[in-house]
Length: 390
Image (cartoon, rainbow, N blue to C red; front, side, top):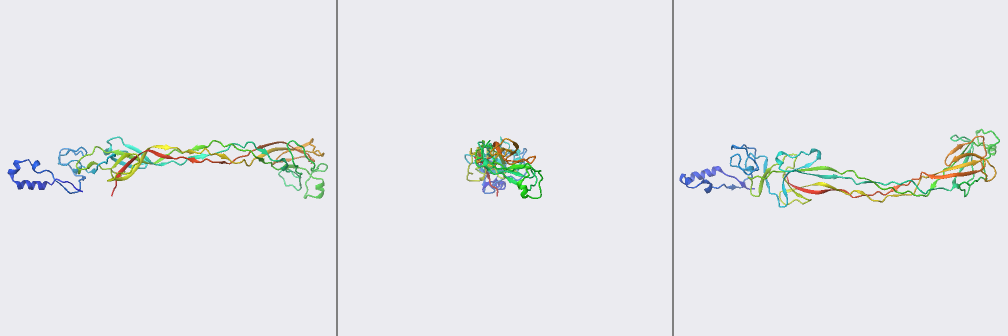
């Protein structure tokens, strides 16, 4: 790297060599202009000014009267010479790229205009799509001939010694009395014994009646509208770009004098361009992209469906009668629900039976579907390219 260096000692020697007459004949500024030599470009070093005023490092003037301007003046230790902004880009900026909670704001040296504030690292999980089904409709009770009615010699919930199953009725229908067989209690005292003996078979003890459950079949469930839940998008990173003041002088041709960024900002100065762009060739190679908006089209497919109803039961009421004539239901003894047990008193005979009501209930359908769609993404991007370090 070459830079401009004025060598005062060399100039003084030239003056002495020419003699006093030559010195009076022509102004030194015309005969001996400043020369530049290949030497590292000045970047300041914390020296003190020798003039009356303090050096303004960004105005192109020698404010402190020491013959050095802006970045060439050791008083401008917080300024640096940097490459010019490429065509199509804007700059310069001090850039913070980090956690939103640690946003430092803009330092005084980079408060020349409105800062840019954007975001990166969008966290937006897919939508949650919940399908559900309404209650089962159109179910019917299973065939009544599947009902098994039993009589035992012990009350409901107690251990029994003897129990008798009534014959099932083929083709049995609602409100139809049936009963060619039965359990004939009656004449004897009802006291359960130690064992189920032959004489107890002849004269059973009737203490309770129970019936098996009756299944509900068929039907369908209507799917409910899909329920959509999409958590609010959240940014995990923040970008703050603080504009530098107008560039000063004191640098080589094609380079300008601007403040030097400090922590927690990126170590090198940055340039910017709207959109998501590749960094230009040259000094600005570290790319950062930030967004100022969000496009969110997360949702769910309208694909909810329901399987066949299951676990439905039938609330069936069975009336039991003591009439011994075939298919006669006049003397009711007790009612028992399908799937339940009922106690009886007086050791009655149980023969005629009739299902007086049967209503399906409780069927449920398993939902399927609920496919998430879309995504959330950053919108209105802006690219910053910064000088690499090292």
